[in-house]
Image (cartoon, each protein chain N blue to C red):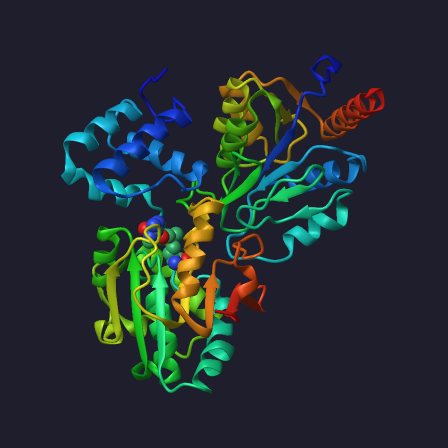
Length: 204
Length: 281
Ligand SMILES: C[S@@+](CC[C@H](N)C(=O)[O-])C[C@H]1O[C@@H](n2cnc3c(N)ncnc32)[C@H](O)[C@@H]1O
């Protein structure tokens, strides 16, 4: 259920995980973002390991904000969307940069959503929003738990709306997720969030 | 608080500092400037693998059991590798870089820094063999991890990993079939040792930064991603010093020289494949 009470301008970053069936909702989200959206977004989507090109371009076409595949130790800029590159895990590093790694696959995946979510939770603590979309495995469930443990906000795509609901379902089973929303409401949430930051700026 | 069981706990930075200090004092290896995010996961993995109940227990073990240290180094480093990783990179090495070097030299010297279990080295030797110039080459392959160097020397690959190697080799459009370079024994593939006759494997720690020779090509791919920027900068200085002027540096496809102190001493040869040339001493 959509709840305005969860909105706050304390957040510093957003992290989104998705797998099978997540391309449609993620493009809907990226195309619905307001141009002024102030937070960095980390995107970890399961993808073909050996196809380096094409994916970031496909997302960029739809996205209001710039989507990029970061290099190792690239510094994090507000309003950018960072997509985990093929065959690398992507972590948020302390000190506002991104680390890549070729560690073993996690949940049969590289990039693994758990890794991105956990590292982001560690860096941003309660100032993080985690969003988990459609998918056919359980990657991300543990990461969502970490976000919750550190006081962050957790959202999943409503399993009823998902092409494959295993992934958000797994998160709902292991963690008390704050909100289960349709993609439309996720977008609405982000738009409302953006508004709060504007209010803050006007007051200063 | 720690509770046992997989993934039940999280490690804090202060725990890691203690561990790093002990390893430095007792074993003279310095992990202080490793990238925190992956280093932390490695420690967590070791704790789970060996069923320690805390970082303190691991510190305790390392304090009293020097024989455990080699295993520790093995587990703390990430050894995941593939033959012909990024096939398009190897195409550029074959079609542009090697011919470029041979146009002015008749010998070619190569250093693989952080060679892991050798897949990158085997790939290069196959490339040279198929170009008919392997006898003009000399290669040094190094890693910090003694156990992994021994595996590289052994040159045996599991069936499971061969599938990926084979499909990479096909994308690279090698001359033959990859199997040609291996003999099969049960589910292991043994790389033909003759093709390694111009390679020497050695232990070398990039953190200590010792320069031991000069090379025409240095490959240091997917190694510096495990370091923070401070250490990346100092390792790049070592790599720079280890190259002849106009020699080539190859780094991983998602690494970049843009942010490093000495990026102005290199020029970009191929940005997509991350190949640079030492343009200034
Ligand atoms: C992911 S592997 C890279 C293998 C290969 N170059 C590739 O791209 O597939 C990273 C290697 O760097 C080695 N390494 C880590 N720290 C090192 C250090 N301080 N000195 C030398 N090698 C190191 C690890 O032991 C590991 O084998």
